[in-house]
Length: 224
Image (cartoon, rainbow, N blue to C red):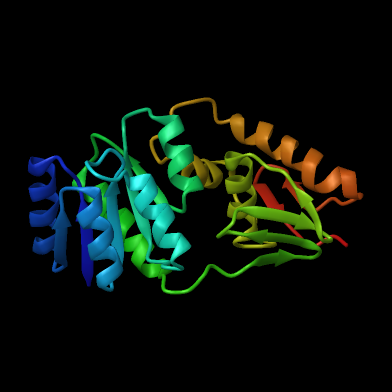
């Protein structure tokens, strides 16, 4: 498996490179955005690790350009600690995951392996549940062809449920999949987003596709 790591913190870059090579990965590195984009375009990678703040071109723009080129290689973006806006923009520009600095190498490794298992190479398929359609690439949602405006986080919660339609996802599952494994806020934030989503994707259309399973969690079902 070949991995590209782009970061201008040379000590961190060397540490990630050494750690990944010890795990059997082939690693290419770049310390600026221009070289990083060139490598990403010229080679096939299992996954790309991108820092946000890079000389020459930011990680945002690299990711955005790759997606515009229809390059769907999984990308994990490294963000500033507690940088909520960084995380939002990372997802908006096409990143598949993000990790806040400082981070454990073992956590990075686990995230990389998860992205590799998920795979890349093709435009993400549309998620369709009844007459509700999600486009993960453009982050657009429609119900019966009618566009629905969602915030980035609302889309992420809906996408998390839509990825496994009919399956009950616990509040803990949603927090880990949409926020962060280290989320320390109020877990009831999930209920707030579920309520908002119902008000946007269900009630205006006379639907009840987002179900609460008492004591277990939530699931998304076809309701037409």
